Length: 486
Image 1: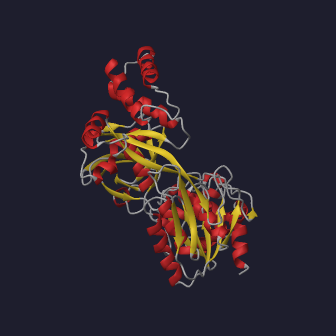
Image 2 (image 1 turned 90 degrees about the horizontal axis):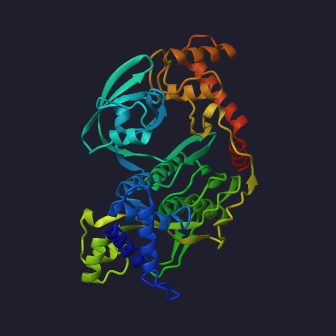
Image 3 (image 1 turned 90 degrees about the vertical axis):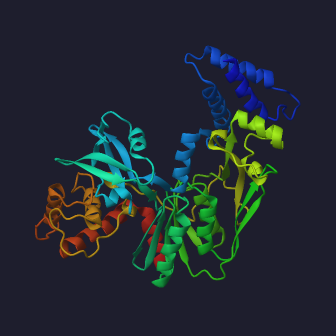
């Protein structure tokens, strides 16, 4: 117990430079608090657990966005931010039989192996998933790149084993399509792939001669500032994009600029109460530059920035403090600059801490305030759980019949579910359940009943999609109305 307390106090005292700005030394006080925790808590704690517990409490108490993450948590956090990971590329949810695949990511090992949305995973390498949480099953599925995992899958009444080779999964946060000479671009988040995917979309949009953009930032909670800035540089004319202001002298204030000489774009930006952080940087830059209008609801108002720092173990800190004069437990970059390269065993985890705040192009403070839309419009609804902004119209794939598989089937199933014709889980396969839903739709709309998706049915479904959007998404409707004025 005493050893753990000593390690913990070492870390805490180092973080506070031993003495507060008022000259008070909290070392003995914190030591007493740790000893009390370890003595009174009903479970035993080893040295590392005690240290991590104290760090979690110290940093998570600052604000909702700061915290300490151990190595496993750091990996998960990095993967969520980066948008890249080694695995099979499927998101999961719990179901009575085990876990169900909610989404198979595009161009992933799971997609190449033929897995479908709605497939139920009964076992991983022969071990049952019954009663397990999705994150536990996900950790069992993941592994080293190039290795294989065998999943026992239930698809309706069929049961099969599918062996998948693990590989790199790249999650694209950008979805776009052209509607009535308007480029509708939805950005889900600003991960490390956003700017690249956005620029590729914009290259295609430019090639087609489209100049009107409906930029959908609803429910975008942010991500990397650099990615949002890169998107802004493609849209707004030269000038300031945003300013980042830091308190610590260890971090330099930064101004981000656009150097775009001409911006031909007419932009309507859809926002809601969940548009936050980096998404607000982009929306605010467009609004302040006079390059577009914001439509929807007042945004979240998260105008603060977090930085991540790797943390030394107490042993590593003591060593490098003695050898190189390291002042903080997070002096990793400082040590690397001096030619010191750390082993993984010398890293305890990561601290994510709020370090500064940002201002918009015109100097507006966003934190706690948010951005007011130029045009207020009510939030969308999700009929039967379907986000219509993520549904695309059906393309001309010829006539689709029983057991056909593909994206057009998937879009048809989502449209049919939103309209109440289909109660199943969209899974890209035209099975009997899908066929019956198509028949119901055909019968209700005076289309020859076949259960197939032919040209007439395809046009009818695309028309139904337009109607559903008009009925369920006032913000989308208002954005399209405004862009049609130009």
